[in-house]
Length: 355
Image 1: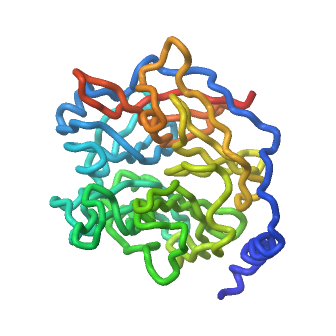
Image 2 (image 1 turned 90 degrees about the horizontal axis):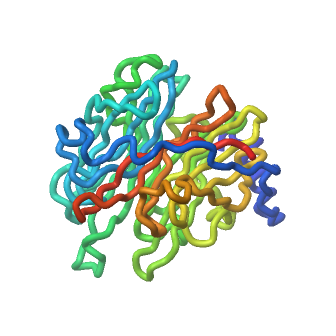
């Protein structure tokens, strides 16, 4: 263990040994302050039609640079949650979007022998040490029926890191080159992770240490969707899991996925994520980026203006909560709608602010 690990890691171990309670939210509550009427990217968007995206969008990350929003998002170009590619879109107002390129494609043929049958983008982070953008995405294989696995489910997620070929912040558009796997199932896997893990990955820095949220799930017997943390001295690793017992976190009872973490102006941390509830997402607050408070859910579509279908998994994943100059947070998210009787996962937009 390197010396630079010690300060935060010892704090974590002491917290684990003393069974320290999770931090409580620092007295802040988010509220919906505005929303776009209907999706900002729907099934009839010209670039959706031109790219042959038949089922919509799911998971991703939006960052803002010099008044331009950059969205890296999964397109479900055929079957929802099966046929995947990672696409890059831009906008100057978070409402009018233009598709720019395909960043990563899955390998056709969803089988148990294809470890990149699906690719799901989780995070886009600028790495100061490399002077380059990093994309983190998970790749799955399908289940192996000869082993009693469910062929339609995702197994053995592996977190890939890709780096922008063009150096500097202006290189965000790519292209991106794979640098290798940073976290995967293995001898260090923990019992709660299940057959799907590692299911997502979002890195952020607290102090001198990088931390990351990562998810797991049991298909058989069917379980919840717990979240744990990993840590590393640098963004490019090496990444190690926090101790079993600290993991999994106690933020939710059953379900959260695809977490995105921000450090706020007052130095506290906010994590926003996919949660249960009709037209709802969840968030959690932390004083130090290590101990997290219980989930708070917030409606992101108001009565009379809802366009997402009701149900726990139909308002899906927030792709950002970008702090704006007026004190609000711009949230871009995915949600399911019905188009001619068929499900299409569209992109929505709203603004949140502290109450």
